[in-house]
Length: 567
Image (cartoon, rainbow, N blue to C red; front, side, top):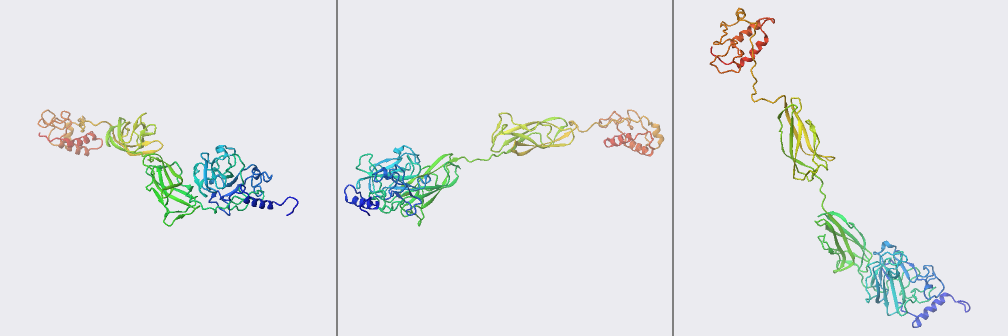
Protein backbone atom coordinates (compact mmCIF):
# COMPACT_ATOMS: atom_id res chain seq x y z
CA UNK A 1 0.00 0.00 0.00
CA UNK A 2 1.17 3.56 -0.60
CA UNK A 3 0.01 6.88 0.87
CA UNK A 4 0.42 8.73 -2.35
CA UNK A 5 -1.20 7.62 -5.55
CA UNK A 6 -4.24 5.43 -6.17
CA UNK A 7 -4.80 2.72 -3.56
CA UNK A 8 -5.20 -0.84 -4.79
CA UNK A 9 -8.68 -2.07 -5.74
CA UNK A 10 -8.55 -4.81 -3.13
CA UNK A 11 -8.27 -2.20 -0.41
CA UNK A 12 -11.17 -0.21 -1.87
CA UNK A 13 -13.30 -3.32 -2.13
CA UNK A 14 -12.61 -4.32 1.46
CA UNK A 15 -13.30 -0.83 2.74
CA UNK A 16 -16.54 -0.56 0.75
CA UNK A 17 -17.72 -3.85 2.08
CA UNK A 18 -17.02 -2.76 5.61
CA UNK A 19 -18.82 0.56 5.16
CA UNK A 20 -21.76 -1.20 3.60
CA UNK A 21 -22.16 -3.19 6.76
CA UNK A 22 -21.95 -0.15 9.05
CA UNK A 23 -23.83 2.59 7.26
CA UNK A 24 -27.63 2.32 7.49
CA UNK A 25 -29.41 2.46 4.13
CA UNK A 26 -26.32 1.32 2.33
CA UNK A 27 -26.06 -2.30 3.37
CA UNK A 28 -28.77 -4.84 2.63
CA UNK A 29 -29.28 -8.26 4.09
CA UNK A 30 -27.31 -10.92 2.25
CA UNK A 31 -30.30 -13.23 1.82
CA UNK A 32 -30.43 -14.32 -1.81
CA UNK A 33 -30.27 -17.95 -2.79
CA UNK A 34 -29.74 -19.31 -6.32
CA UNK A 35 -32.75 -18.70 -8.57
CA UNK A 36 -32.44 -22.12 -10.24
CA UNK A 37 -33.06 -25.49 -8.69
CA UNK A 38 -31.54 -28.78 -9.76
CA UNK A 39 -28.44 -27.41 -11.47
CA UNK A 40 -25.19 -29.37 -11.38
CA UNK A 41 -23.24 -27.22 -8.99
CA UNK A 42 -19.54 -27.91 -9.28
CA UNK A 43 -19.45 -29.05 -12.90
CA UNK A 44 -21.85 -26.44 -14.38
CA UNK A 45 -22.50 -28.53 -17.48
CA UNK A 46 -26.28 -28.15 -17.21
CA UNK A 47 -26.59 -24.61 -15.86
CA UNK A 48 -23.96 -21.92 -16.38
CA UNK A 49 -23.46 -18.15 -16.36
CA UNK A 50 -23.88 -16.90 -19.91
CA UNK A 51 -23.73 -13.14 -19.15
CA UNK A 52 -23.21 -10.99 -16.06
CA UNK A 53 -24.52 -7.54 -15.25
CA UNK A 54 -22.67 -4.68 -17.00
CA UNK A 55 -21.38 -2.75 -14.00
CA UNK A 56 -21.16 0.46 -16.05
CA UNK A 57 -24.92 0.22 -16.46
CA UNK A 58 -25.50 0.55 -12.72
CA UNK A 59 -23.73 2.59 -10.09
CA UNK A 60 -20.94 3.60 -12.43
CA UNK A 61 -18.42 2.64 -9.79
CA UNK A 62 -15.89 2.21 -12.56
CA UNK A 63 -15.85 3.34 -16.15
CA UNK A 64 -15.72 -0.22 -17.44
CA UNK A 65 -18.44 -0.43 -20.02
CA UNK A 66 -19.12 -4.12 -20.85
CA UNK A 67 -17.18 -5.41 -17.82
CA UNK A 68 -18.54 -7.74 -15.17
CA UNK A 69 -18.15 -7.56 -11.38
CA UNK A 70 -14.79 -9.30 -11.57
CA UNK A 71 -13.52 -6.91 -14.26
CA UNK A 72 -13.91 -9.78 -16.71
CA UNK A 73 -15.55 -9.78 -20.09
CA UNK A 74 -18.44 -12.07 -19.19
CA UNK A 75 -20.86 -9.18 -19.82
CA UNK A 76 -21.96 -7.05 -22.71
CA UNK A 77 -22.62 -3.34 -22.92
CA UNK A 78 -25.86 -2.25 -21.33
CA UNK A 79 -26.85 -5.63 -19.85
CA UNK A 80 -28.84 -4.94 -16.70
CA UNK A 81 -29.05 -8.36 -15.11
CA UNK A 82 -27.52 -11.82 -14.91
CA UNK A 83 -28.22 -14.61 -17.42
CA UNK A 84 -28.03 -18.32 -16.61
CA UNK A 85 -28.19 -20.71 -19.57
CA UNK A 86 -29.45 -24.30 -19.55
CA UNK A 87 -27.95 -25.72 -22.75
CA UNK A 88 -30.28 -24.52 -25.49
CA UNK A 89 -33.91 -24.43 -26.52
CA UNK A 90 -34.14 -28.22 -26.70
CA UNK A 91 -34.07 -28.33 -22.89
CA UNK A 92 -37.01 -25.98 -22.42
CA UNK A 93 -39.47 -27.70 -20.14
CA UNK A 94 -37.10 -30.38 -18.93
CA UNK A 95 -34.30 -28.38 -17.30
CA UNK A 96 -34.20 -25.23 -15.18
CA UNK A 97 -36.82 -24.93 -12.43
CA UNK A 98 -36.96 -21.26 -11.39
CA UNK A 99 -37.43 -20.62 -7.67
CA UNK A 100 -37.75 -17.59 -5.42
CA UNK A 101 -34.36 -16.26 -4.31
CA UNK A 102 -35.83 -15.20 -0.93
CA UNK A 103 -39.13 -14.84 0.92
CA UNK A 104 -41.47 -12.20 -0.49
CA UNK A 105 -44.75 -11.39 -2.17
CA UNK A 106 -45.48 -11.73 -5.86
CA UNK A 107 -46.19 -8.24 -7.14
CA UNK A 108 -46.65 -8.97 -10.88
CA UNK A 109 -46.70 -11.82 -13.37
CA UNK A 110 -46.89 -12.05 -17.13
CA UNK A 111 -47.62 -15.22 -19.11
CA UNK A 112 -48.80 -16.09 -22.61
CA UNK A 113 -45.76 -15.14 -24.69
CA UNK A 114 -44.37 -17.83 -26.97
CA UNK A 115 -41.77 -19.99 -25.24
CA UNK A 116 -39.23 -19.09 -27.93
CA UNK A 117 -38.98 -15.44 -28.91
CA UNK A 118 -36.35 -13.47 -30.78
CA UNK A 119 -34.05 -10.50 -30.39
CA UNK A 120 -36.11 -7.33 -30.15
CA UNK A 121 -39.37 -9.18 -29.41
CA UNK A 122 -41.54 -6.83 -27.34
CA UNK A 123 -43.82 -9.41 -25.70
CA UNK A 124 -43.88 -8.77 -21.96
CA UNK A 125 -41.89 -5.58 -22.48
CA UNK A 126 -39.05 -7.71 -23.83
CA UNK A 127 -39.06 -9.88 -20.69
CA UNK A 128 -41.55 -12.31 -22.19
CA UNK A 129 -43.12 -14.41 -19.45
CA UNK A 130 -41.84 -13.22 -16.08
CA UNK A 131 -42.47 -12.89 -12.32
CA UNK A 132 -41.71 -9.92 -10.08
CA UNK A 133 -41.29 -10.40 -6.31
CA UNK A 134 -41.00 -7.73 -3.61
CA UNK A 135 -38.76 -8.63 -0.69
CA UNK A 136 -39.87 -6.24 2.07
CA UNK A 137 -37.22 -7.32 4.54
CA UNK A 138 -34.42 -6.14 2.25
CA UNK A 139 -36.02 -3.37 0.20
CA UNK A 140 -35.34 -5.33 -2.90
CA UNK A 141 -37.30 -6.40 -5.99
CA UNK A 142 -36.23 -9.42 -7.99
CA UNK A 143 -37.39 -10.13 -11.55
CA UNK A 144 -37.27 -13.58 -13.25
CA UNK A 145 -37.66 -13.28 -17.02
CA UNK A 146 -37.96 -15.24 -20.31
CA UNK A 147 -39.92 -18.11 -18.75
CA UNK A 148 -41.51 -20.96 -20.70
CA UNK A 149 -45.02 -20.21 -21.88
CA UNK A 150 -47.62 -21.55 -19.45
CA UNK A 151 -45.10 -22.39 -16.76
CA UNK A 152 -45.70 -19.42 -14.41
CA UNK A 153 -46.71 -21.14 -11.17
CA UNK A 154 -47.64 -18.16 -8.97
CA UNK A 155 -50.02 -15.18 -9.14
CA UNK A 156 -49.96 -11.58 -8.01
CA UNK A 157 -50.40 -11.11 -4.26
CA UNK A 158 -49.20 -14.59 -3.43
CA UNK A 159 -46.64 -14.98 -0.64
CA UNK A 160 -43.66 -17.14 -1.48
CA UNK A 161 -40.83 -18.68 0.46
CA UNK A 162 -37.23 -19.05 -0.49
CA UNK A 163 -37.08 -21.97 -2.91
CA UNK A 164 -40.75 -21.88 -3.97
CA UNK A 165 -41.22 -22.69 -7.64
CA UNK A 166 -42.00 -19.72 -9.89
CA UNK A 167 -41.82 -21.33 -13.34
CA UNK A 168 -39.53 -22.97 -15.91
CA UNK A 169 -36.71 -21.57 -18.02
CA UNK A 170 -37.70 -20.58 -21.56
CA UNK A 171 -36.65 -18.12 -24.25
CA UNK A 172 -39.71 -15.86 -24.46
CA UNK A 173 -39.62 -12.18 -25.32
CA UNK A 174 -36.42 -10.56 -26.53
CA UNK A 175 -34.21 -13.62 -26.26
CA UNK A 176 -31.96 -15.61 -28.55
CA UNK A 177 -31.71 -18.81 -26.50
CA UNK A 178 -33.10 -20.59 -23.45
CA UNK A 179 -31.93 -18.88 -20.25
CA UNK A 180 -33.09 -17.23 -17.05
CA UNK A 181 -32.55 -13.47 -16.87
CA UNK A 182 -32.85 -12.09 -13.34
CA UNK A 183 -32.10 -8.64 -12.04
CA UNK A 184 -32.24 -6.94 -8.67
CA UNK A 185 -33.42 -3.38 -8.00
CA UNK A 186 -34.38 -1.33 -4.93
CA UNK A 187 -38.04 -1.58 -3.96
CA UNK A 188 -38.14 1.97 -2.53
CA UNK A 189 -36.45 3.62 -5.48
CA UNK A 190 -38.53 5.42 -8.10
CA UNK A 191 -39.48 3.66 -11.27
CA UNK A 192 -36.59 3.28 -13.67
CA UNK A 193 -33.98 3.38 -10.92
CA UNK A 194 -30.74 1.62 -11.61
CA UNK A 195 -30.51 -2.10 -10.94
CA UNK A 196 -28.02 -3.62 -8.61
CA UNK A 197 -25.46 -6.25 -9.33
CA UNK A 198 -25.73 -8.71 -6.40
CA UNK A 199 -22.17 -9.96 -6.98
CA UNK A 200 -19.18 -8.41 -5.21
CA UNK A 201 -15.76 -8.25 -6.82
CA UNK A 202 -12.88 -6.18 -8.07
CA UNK A 203 -15.07 -4.02 -10.29
CA UNK A 204 -18.09 -3.86 -7.96
CA UNK A 205 -17.52 -2.36 -4.54
CA UNK A 206 -20.93 -3.27 -3.18
CA UNK A 207 -21.20 -6.10 -0.75
CA UNK A 208 -22.40 -9.41 -2.08
CA UNK A 209 -26.09 -9.99 -1.64
CA UNK A 210 -25.80 -13.77 -1.94
CA UNK A 211 -25.81 -16.13 0.98
CA UNK A 212 -22.97 -17.91 -0.79
CA UNK A 213 -21.62 -16.19 -3.87
CA UNK A 214 -18.95 -18.62 -5.08
CA UNK A 215 -16.28 -17.73 -7.64
CA UNK A 216 -16.33 -16.05 -11.02
CA UNK A 217 -18.47 -17.91 -13.60
CA UNK A 218 -19.73 -20.16 -10.84
CA UNK A 219 -23.37 -20.32 -9.83
CA UNK A 220 -24.44 -19.17 -6.40
CA UNK A 221 -24.91 -22.25 -4.23
CA UNK A 222 -28.42 -23.59 -3.92
CA UNK A 223 -28.08 -25.19 -0.51
CA UNK A 224 -28.48 -22.09 1.66
CA UNK A 225 -32.25 -22.21 2.08
CA UNK A 226 -34.46 -25.18 2.63
CA UNK A 227 -36.79 -25.20 -0.33
CA UNK A 228 -40.45 -25.96 -0.01
CA UNK A 229 -41.14 -29.45 -1.45
CA UNK A 230 -41.69 -29.07 -5.17
CA UNK A 231 -43.41 -31.76 -7.22
CA UNK A 232 -42.63 -31.34 -10.85
CA UNK A 233 -42.08 -33.44 -13.93
CA UNK A 234 -40.93 -32.76 -17.45
CA UNK A 235 -41.52 -34.64 -20.67
CA UNK A 236 -38.54 -36.68 -21.89
CA UNK A 237 -39.92 -39.00 -24.59
CA UNK A 238 -42.93 -41.04 -25.67
CA UNK A 239 -44.07 -43.77 -28.02
CA UNK A 240 -47.13 -43.69 -30.31
CA UNK A 241 -46.90 -40.23 -31.90
CA UNK A 242 -50.05 -38.11 -31.93
CA UNK A 243 -52.61 -39.00 -34.61
CA UNK A 244 -51.27 -42.53 -35.03
CA UNK A 245 -53.87 -44.79 -36.65
CA UNK A 246 -55.22 -47.95 -35.09
CA UNK A 247 -57.95 -50.30 -36.23
CA UNK A 248 -61.10 -50.04 -34.13
CA UNK A 249 -60.75 -52.39 -31.18
CA UNK A 250 -56.99 -52.77 -31.68
CA UNK A 251 -54.83 -52.93 -28.54
CA UNK A 252 -51.63 -50.95 -28.13
CA UNK A 253 -49.32 -49.72 -25.37
CA UNK A 254 -48.56 -46.04 -24.90
CA UNK A 255 -45.46 -45.04 -22.94
CA UNK A 256 -44.29 -41.72 -21.54
CA UNK A 257 -40.85 -41.15 -20.06
CA UNK A 258 -40.95 -38.30 -17.53
CA UNK A 259 -38.13 -36.63 -15.65
CA UNK A 260 -38.41 -35.66 -12.00
CA UNK A 261 -37.66 -31.92 -12.15
CA UNK A 262 -38.90 -31.21 -8.63
CA UNK A 263 -37.06 -31.60 -5.34
CA UNK A 264 -39.02 -34.57 -4.04
CA UNK A 265 -38.47 -38.29 -4.49
CA UNK A 266 -41.35 -40.25 -5.99
CA UNK A 267 -42.32 -43.41 -4.13
CA UNK A 268 -45.45 -45.51 -3.91
CA UNK A 269 -45.58 -45.01 -0.13
CA UNK A 270 -45.75 -41.23 -0.60
CA UNK A 271 -48.68 -41.55 -3.01
CA UNK A 272 -46.97 -40.90 -6.34
CA UNK A 273 -48.50 -42.42 -9.44
CA UNK A 274 -49.40 -41.75 -13.07
CA UNK A 275 -53.14 -41.27 -13.43
CA UNK A 276 -55.89 -40.80 -16.02
CA UNK A 277 -57.41 -37.33 -15.68
CA UNK A 278 -59.87 -37.03 -18.55
CA UNK A 279 -60.65 -37.38 -22.21
CA UNK A 280 -61.74 -40.65 -23.76
CA UNK A 281 -60.97 -43.58 -21.49
CA UNK A 282 -58.98 -45.92 -23.72
CA UNK A 283 -57.34 -47.98 -20.99
CA UNK A 284 -58.58 -50.71 -18.71
CA UNK A 285 -56.69 -49.02 -15.85
CA UNK A 286 -57.18 -45.56 -14.37
CA UNK A 287 -53.69 -45.26 -12.90
CA UNK A 288 -50.26 -46.87 -13.01
CA UNK A 289 -48.47 -47.35 -9.69
CA UNK A 290 -44.79 -47.38 -8.81
CA UNK A 291 -43.24 -50.60 -7.57
CA UNK A 292 -43.12 -51.11 -3.80
CA UNK A 293 -39.36 -50.58 -3.68
CA UNK A 294 -39.13 -48.16 -6.60
CA UNK A 295 -38.03 -44.54 -6.03
CA UNK A 296 -37.49 -41.77 -8.57
CA UNK A 297 -35.08 -39.18 -7.22
CA UNK A 298 -34.86 -35.58 -8.49
CA UNK A 299 -33.23 -35.60 -11.91
CA UNK A 300 -34.09 -39.28 -12.55
CA UNK A 301 -36.57 -40.51 -15.17
CA UNK A 302 -39.45 -42.94 -15.06
CA UNK A 303 -41.15 -44.65 -18.02
CA UNK A 304 -44.86 -45.19 -17.59
CA UNK A 305 -46.49 -47.85 -19.77
CA UNK A 306 -50.25 -47.77 -20.22
CA UNK A 307 -52.20 -50.54 -22.01
CA UNK A 308 -54.86 -49.05 -24.28
CA UNK A 309 -57.49 -50.10 -26.81
CA UNK A 310 -58.76 -48.03 -29.72
CA UNK A 311 -62.51 -47.31 -29.46
CA UNK A 312 -64.93 -49.39 -31.53
CA UNK A 313 -66.22 -46.39 -33.50
CA UNK A 314 -63.95 -44.68 -36.05
CA UNK A 315 -62.84 -41.17 -35.03
CA UNK A 316 -60.10 -39.14 -33.32
CA UNK A 317 -59.72 -39.68 -29.58
CA UNK A 318 -57.62 -38.08 -26.83
CA UNK A 319 -56.84 -39.55 -23.40
CA UNK A 320 -55.23 -37.29 -20.76
CA UNK A 321 -52.83 -38.41 -18.04
CA UNK A 322 -50.75 -36.67 -15.36
CA UNK A 323 -48.39 -37.28 -12.48
CA UNK A 324 -50.17 -37.24 -9.13
CA UNK A 325 -49.32 -37.25 -5.47
CA UNK A 326 -52.24 -38.29 -3.31
CA UNK A 327 -54.68 -37.14 -5.97
CA UNK A 328 -53.02 -33.76 -6.70
CA UNK A 329 -51.83 -33.37 -10.27
CA UNK A 330 -48.43 -31.94 -11.13
CA UNK A 331 -46.03 -31.77 -14.02
CA UNK A 332 -48.57 -30.84 -16.68
CA UNK A 333 -50.94 -32.89 -18.80
CA UNK A 334 -49.63 -35.79 -20.85
CA UNK A 335 -51.98 -37.07 -23.51
CA UNK A 336 -52.25 -39.51 -26.35
CA UNK A 337 -54.28 -38.70 -29.45
CA UNK A 338 -55.05 -41.47 -31.89
CA UNK A 339 -57.25 -42.07 -34.91
CA UNK A 340 -59.44 -45.16 -34.77
CA UNK A 341 -60.14 -46.40 -38.29
CA UNK A 342 -62.36 -49.15 -39.61
CA UNK A 343 -60.49 -52.36 -40.36
CA UNK A 344 -59.36 -52.78 -43.92
CA UNK A 345 -61.07 -55.88 -45.32
CA UNK A 346 -59.22 -57.35 -48.29
CA UNK A 347 -61.21 -57.74 -51.50
CA UNK A 348 -62.49 -61.28 -51.98
CA UNK A 349 -63.79 -62.26 -55.41
CA UNK A 350 -65.92 -65.39 -55.39
CA UNK A 351 -68.95 -66.87 -57.10
CA UNK A 352 -71.12 -69.99 -57.12
CA UNK A 353 -73.19 -71.58 -59.86
CA UNK A 354 -76.92 -71.22 -59.21
CA UNK A 355 -78.41 -72.52 -62.48
CA UNK A 356 -77.63 -73.33 -66.12
CA UNK A 357 -79.24 -74.61 -69.30
CA UNK A 358 -77.98 -77.00 -72.02
CA UNK A 359 -76.79 -79.79 -69.72
CA UNK A 360 -73.86 -81.99 -70.63
CA UNK A 361 -74.67 -84.51 -73.39
CA UNK A 362 -77.19 -82.34 -75.17
CA UNK A 363 -77.28 -83.31 -78.90
CA UNK A 364 -76.95 -80.43 -81.33
CA UNK A 365 -76.63 -80.61 -85.13
CA UNK A 366 -73.23 -79.46 -86.28
CA UNK A 367 -73.14 -75.82 -87.33
CA UNK A 368 -76.35 -74.99 -85.47
CA UNK A 369 -76.53 -72.01 -83.15
CA UNK A 370 -77.59 -72.25 -79.50
CA UNK A 371 -77.54 -70.04 -76.39
CA UNK A 372 -75.80 -71.22 -73.26
CA UNK A 373 -76.82 -69.56 -69.97
CA UNK A 374 -75.29 -69.68 -66.52
CA UNK A 375 -76.75 -67.96 -63.47
CA UNK A 376 -73.98 -67.24 -60.95
CA UNK A 377 -74.21 -65.76 -57.46
CA UNK A 378 -71.73 -63.18 -56.09
CA UNK A 379 -70.45 -64.91 -52.95
CA UNK A 380 -67.48 -62.55 -52.41
CA UNK A 381 -67.37 -59.10 -50.80
CA UNK A 382 -66.79 -57.07 -53.95
CA UNK A 383 -69.33 -55.50 -56.28
CA UNK A 384 -69.02 -56.49 -59.92
CA UNK A 385 -69.07 -53.67 -62.44
CA UNK A 386 -67.81 -53.21 -65.96
CA UNK A 387 -65.57 -50.34 -64.81
CA UNK A 388 -63.79 -52.67 -62.40
CA UNK A 389 -63.14 -55.22 -65.13
CA UNK A 390 -65.57 -57.97 -64.12
CA UNK A 391 -66.51 -60.27 -67.00
CA UNK A 392 -67.02 -63.86 -68.19
CA UNK A 393 -63.86 -65.27 -69.73
CA UNK A 394 -63.04 -68.35 -71.84
CA UNK A 395 -60.53 -70.63 -70.14
CA UNK A 396 -59.91 -73.65 -72.34
CA UNK A 397 -61.46 -76.07 -74.78
CA UNK A 398 -63.79 -74.91 -77.53
CA UNK A 399 -65.12 -71.33 -77.33
CA UNK A 400 -68.04 -72.43 -79.58
CA UNK A 401 -67.52 -69.28 -81.66
CA UNK A 402 -68.66 -67.14 -78.71
CA UNK A 403 -67.60 -63.49 -78.51
CA UNK A 404 -65.47 -63.62 -75.36
CA UNK A 405 -64.76 -62.23 -72.88
CA UNK A 406 -68.33 -61.18 -72.16
CA UNK A 407 -68.48 -57.89 -70.24
CA UNK A 408 -71.15 -56.53 -67.94
CA UNK A 409 -73.39 -53.80 -69.31
CA UNK A 410 -72.54 -50.16 -68.64
CA UNK A 411 -73.97 -49.18 -65.26
CA UNK A 412 -74.72 -52.78 -64.28
CA UNK A 413 -73.72 -53.69 -60.71
CA UNK A 414 -73.80 -57.10 -59.09
CA UNK A 415 -73.54 -56.61 -55.33
CA UNK A 416 -72.48 -59.35 -52.90
CA UNK A 417 -75.33 -61.85 -52.62
CA UNK A 418 -76.90 -60.87 -55.96
CA UNK A 419 -77.00 -63.06 -59.07
CA UNK A 420 -76.05 -62.53 -62.69
CA UNK A 421 -77.30 -64.59 -65.66
CA UNK A 422 -74.80 -64.80 -68.47
CA UNK A 423 -76.43 -65.61 -71.86
CA UNK A 424 -73.83 -66.48 -74.45
CA UNK A 425 -74.62 -67.08 -78.14
CA UNK A 426 -72.68 -70.13 -79.38
CA UNK A 427 -72.38 -72.30 -82.51
CA UNK A 428 -71.88 -76.05 -82.48
CA UNK A 429 -68.77 -77.23 -84.33
CA UNK A 430 -69.20 -79.26 -87.57
CA UNK A 431 -67.34 -82.43 -86.55
CA UNK A 432 -69.57 -85.19 -85.19
CA UNK A 433 -68.29 -85.88 -81.69
CA UNK A 434 -68.46 -84.57 -78.13
CA UNK A 435 -67.20 -80.99 -77.81
CA UNK A 436 -66.24 -79.34 -74.51
CA UNK A 437 -65.27 -75.84 -73.39
CA UNK A 438 -64.58 -74.10 -70.05
CA UNK A 439 -65.47 -70.55 -68.96
CA UNK A 440 -65.03 -68.70 -65.65
CA UNK A 441 -65.67 -65.37 -63.92
CA UNK A 442 -62.73 -62.98 -64.15
CA UNK A 443 -61.63 -59.55 -62.92
CA UNK A 444 -59.30 -58.00 -65.46
CA UNK A 445 -55.83 -57.53 -64.06
CA UNK A 446 -56.64 -59.58 -60.94
CA UNK A 447 -57.51 -63.08 -62.13
CA UNK A 448 -60.26 -65.66 -62.45
CA UNK A 449 -62.47 -66.80 -59.61
CA UNK A 450 -65.46 -68.99 -58.85
CA UNK A 451 -66.33 -72.39 -60.32
CA UNK A 452 -65.46 -73.55 -63.83
CA UNK A 453 -68.50 -73.11 -66.06
CA UNK A 454 -68.58 -75.88 -68.64
CA UNK A 455 -70.22 -76.50 -72.01
CA UNK A 456 -70.38 -80.15 -73.21
CA UNK A 457 -72.47 -81.06 -76.27
CA UNK A 458 -72.71 -84.06 -78.62
CA UNK A 459 -72.63 -82.90 -82.23
CA UNK A 460 -74.70 -85.00 -84.69
CA UNK A 461 -75.18 -84.90 -88.50
CA UNK A 462 -78.92 -84.31 -88.55
CA UNK A 463 -81.77 -84.25 -86.15
CA UNK A 464 -83.13 -87.77 -85.22
CA UNK A 465 -86.65 -88.73 -86.45
CA UNK A 466 -89.48 -90.08 -84.32
CA UNK A 467 -89.10 -93.73 -85.76
CA UNK A 468 -85.47 -94.68 -85.32
CA UNK A 469 -85.83 -97.77 -87.67
CA UNK A 470 -85.13 -96.88 -91.31
CA UNK A 471 -87.26 -98.27 -94.19
CA UNK A 472 -86.30 -101.74 -95.50
CA UNK A 473 -84.50 -101.59 -98.84
CA UNK A 474 -86.40 -102.68 -102.01
CA UNK A 475 -84.88 -105.75 -103.64
CA UNK A 476 -85.63 -106.19 -107.35
CA UNK A 477 -85.32 -109.65 -109.03
CA UNK A 478 -82.37 -110.23 -111.27
CA UNK A 479 -83.77 -110.26 -114.85
CA UNK A 480 -80.91 -112.44 -116.04
CA UNK A 481 -82.09 -115.33 -113.94
CA UNK A 482 -85.10 -117.29 -115.28
CA UNK A 483 -86.98 -120.14 -113.73
CA UNK A 484 -85.62 -122.40 -116.37
CA UNK A 485 -82.06 -121.52 -115.47
CA UNK A 486 -82.78 -122.23 -111.84
CA UNK A 487 -84.36 -125.57 -112.70
CA UNK A 488 -81.48 -126.62 -114.89
CA UNK A 489 -79.02 -125.91 -112.17
CA UNK A 490 -80.33 -128.76 -110.15
CA UNK A 491 -79.74 -126.88 -106.90
CA UNK A 492 -83.17 -125.38 -106.45
CA UNK A 493 -85.85 -127.07 -104.38
CA UNK A 494 -88.44 -129.15 -106.11
CA UNK A 495 -91.23 -126.67 -105.49
CA UNK A 496 -91.86 -124.69 -108.64
CA UNK A 497 -91.88 -120.95 -108.50
CA UNK A 498 -95.39 -119.80 -109.03
CA UNK A 499 -95.62 -116.19 -109.95
CA UNK A 500 -99.22 -115.50 -109.37
CA UNK A 501 -101.27 -113.63 -106.86
CA UNK A 502 -102.39 -116.70 -104.92
CA UNK A 503 -99.15 -118.43 -104.24
CA UNK A 504 -95.96 -117.30 -102.56
CA UNK A 505 -92.73 -117.54 -104.51
CA UNK A 506 -89.31 -116.11 -104.05
CA UNK A 507 -90.34 -112.68 -105.17
CA UNK A 508 -94.08 -113.06 -104.77
CA UNK A 509 -96.39 -111.39 -102.32
CA UNK A 510 -96.82 -112.55 -98.76
CA UNK A 511 -99.62 -114.72 -97.71
CA UNK A 512 -102.58 -112.44 -97.12
CA UNK A 513 -103.21 -114.30 -93.91
CA UNK A 514 -99.98 -112.93 -92.36
CA UNK A 515 -99.63 -109.46 -90.86
CA UNK A 516 -98.73 -106.67 -93.25
CA UNK A 517 -95.08 -106.09 -93.83
CA UNK A 518 -93.82 -102.57 -94.79
CA UNK A 519 -92.27 -104.15 -97.90
CA UNK A 520 -95.24 -106.26 -99.05
CA UNK A 521 -96.11 -105.71 -102.70
CA UNK A 522 -92.51 -104.74 -103.53
CA UNK A 523 -91.20 -108.32 -104.25
CA UNK A 524 -88.57 -107.76 -101.60
CA UNK A 525 -89.26 -110.65 -99.18
CA UNK A 526 -87.49 -113.92 -99.93
CA UNK A 527 -88.33 -117.54 -99.13
CA UNK A 528 -85.61 -118.73 -96.78
CA UNK A 529 -85.27 -122.10 -98.45
CA UNK A 530 -84.99 -120.54 -101.88
CA UNK A 531 -82.35 -118.11 -100.70
CA UNK A 532 -80.29 -120.86 -99.18
CA UNK A 533 -80.44 -122.68 -102.51
CA UNK A 534 -79.55 -119.55 -104.40
CA UNK A 535 -76.68 -118.92 -102.05
CA UNK A 536 -75.30 -122.42 -102.47
CA UNK A 537 -75.71 -122.22 -106.26
CA UNK A 538 -74.06 -118.84 -106.42
CA UNK A 539 -71.15 -120.01 -104.34
CA UNK A 540 -70.57 -122.95 -106.68
CA UNK A 541 -70.49 -120.78 -109.75
CA UNK A 542 -67.55 -118.86 -111.01
CA UNK A 543 -67.07 -115.15 -110.52
CA UNK A 544 -68.57 -114.68 -114.00
CA UNK A 545 -71.90 -116.12 -112.87
CA UNK A 546 -74.81 -113.95 -113.95
CA UNK A 547 -76.17 -114.03 -110.35
CA UNK A 548 -74.91 -110.84 -108.67
CA UNK A 549 -73.26 -111.18 -105.31
CA UNK A 550 -75.04 -108.01 -104.21
CA UNK A 551 -78.39 -109.71 -104.49
CA UNK A 552 -77.11 -112.55 -102.34
CA UNK A 553 -75.91 -110.21 -99.66
CA UNK A 554 -79.17 -108.26 -99.65
CA UNK A 555 -81.01 -111.48 -99.28
CA UNK A 556 -78.97 -112.42 -96.28
CA UNK A 557 -79.65 -109.01 -94.78
CA UNK A 558 -83.36 -109.51 -95.15
CA UNK A 559 -83.48 -113.01 -93.68
CA UNK A 560 -83.81 -111.82 -90.02
CA UNK A 561 -86.85 -109.81 -91.02
CA UNK A 562 -88.65 -112.75 -92.69
CA UNK A 563 -92.01 -113.51 -91.19
CA UNK A 564 -93.24 -117.10 -90.87
CA UNK A 565 -95.82 -117.79 -93.59
CA UNK A 566 -98.09 -120.66 -94.47
CA UNK A 567 -98.26 -121.74 -98.07
